[in-house]
Length: 249
Image (spheres, rainbow, N blue to C red):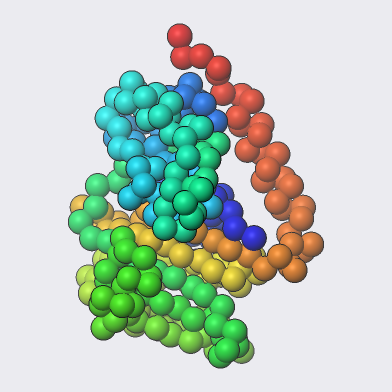
């Protein structure tokens, strides 16, 4: 089972992974209201579909004014995005995610997958973020850092530090990256995930490590153990949507 970016970020934030401030929106009015609640003067309006490559397909728009947010939301809602993962039919956008636009200086890749052949969780990281993992493996295989996690002990802090230093981070960034890597691992393990991907994981101008995008998939056979949580999370999102005003006038 796949979930949307805003749902993945909500989950990962609960495990200590730093994410930008953001809110889901189902209309242009809600998108503008979300931007006012987030604050600042730079926002990203993101189409929420179960497919990668949204940015290249025009599904991510950067905005500097509330008018820009409203225009971006109107353009995206109801539109059909065609990416390399959707096929020619594309997917219709029914919801948006509005978040604070974080200025950054570096993009990294961080992924956790279930390696069924090795019967291990495999951690994959690269200093070349913002690209699909298949493209990184093909074009820059030397940038890939891979670790298999021993299930008896789990991912250890020293392994997370090895990954962080392997990505060329400085001491201040390493401590934050270790927190992010371990948080992603705990989310993967505790929520019966089959994939956690942060692409890109960015380094901001003030040396913060932030998950700018997130993707998660789960084992359908384990959903019975998570039913109560998913039902409550869905209710909370619907409640927040009902509380938003229907007009900004």
